[in-house]
Length: 162
Image (cartoon, rainbow, N blue to C red):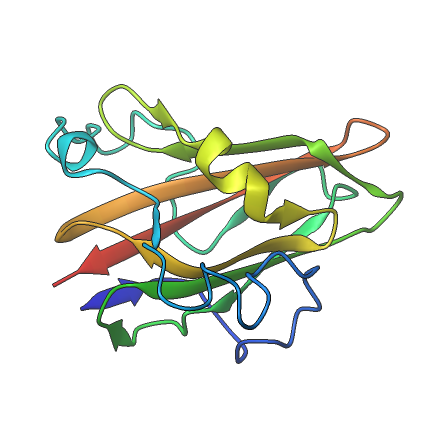
């Protein structure tokens, strides 16, 4: 089961760009889900509490004029069987979102950059993954995005797979 802490509205409410497989495609017909976090990564030592910046789940940090990061799915506190749908919206405030600034980190004792796994599912509107696989356990993930003026914001979330 998956619990994704700090989330809000129902899937589809963010308006994230279409990055899901087209109906009838091999991916839509049951291709393997996207491996967000591997079992080897999950076995790495956890970060010591208080030593990783931005670890307060559900809190957006950074420039108050930077893009807002809104997690729409899965819903806060609910449990899910993987694979899980992930939908995160980027909402511009002062200027347009710069999708090339996207950084996604799996927060362990030494943080693991998982941006390249997520990038194919990201647009300036957000991140949309229909089938994310995570191993059992508790996982902290930080998403960072900036606007074209360089104003960064980040959001850290807790994902628990039972």
